Length: 376
Image (cartoon, rainbow, N blue to C red):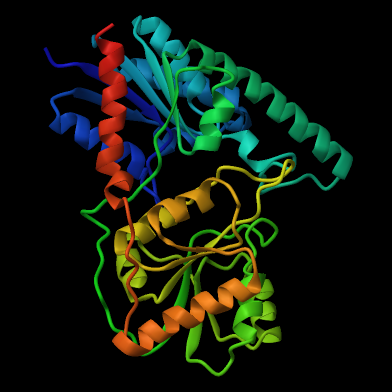
């Protein structure tokens, strides 16, 4: 008899379109599961009342919506994937209501940002802002941890996340993010210019700063090297000022449609990943999806700077490129790849263990957990 699974998640919208969830859903359907995917409708968040923006009310509206969508249905398992908190509360209540095990998948957690946290907005009054963020974090972490303890299993995206969440549920598994080989493939595309390319959001340069790269490039100014940031307009002025002071050729682009990303990566000579060194008070366990897509196109990747932790270990395990700890390392890495580009017109990285980081492989990992719980 086919197993039935209820999948809950945030709204599926651009730019990411929730590839972790959508790939899993397709895989399970192909494997014979009966899946019911109930994502939060975008329209549900655009209510006329100010209260609708508060997390508790958001969960209540979503819970009511899910109930409407599953009238008369029964399930063997509830699966919830979340960015930080929502919709964990709804998932916990639905699992209890349906009398079936719950699996929670946490793609990001509050602890990964260290003591400072990660907020795109702040109150003008610093002490009031600090209190408000503390109360927000305390409340949501208590609610999150209550659901984690209820869950039959927890999944997350890095070994550091797994270790952290295991304090609340020992049945915690690491399932990395990855790339879809049907969408991301290598292609040796010659280029007239050696391009170092960054793709992704930049909310600020505080936690993702390319300064070490610019310092290295300043020491090799005679080469035909161009830096491209596909990061939108948030940090434009800071990046331009940094490039000007280091005499680096830089172009900042708007975000591009997802269907263009593969071509841009294939034409790059080096793919730039921005990070920061892990410290007791700083960020931990952050492994951007662009790293996995870089494995997919088999391009040399440059991490500035090395986190000295999960991402650096993944660089070493997959032979992805350089997790940099010094300007001199970066300079030598660029020169080596530049020589390859001069010889062949393109660069290619001999990555290892690539198959372990496909979304299809990860979907198999999820299914094994689901089957073990459904058979109990």
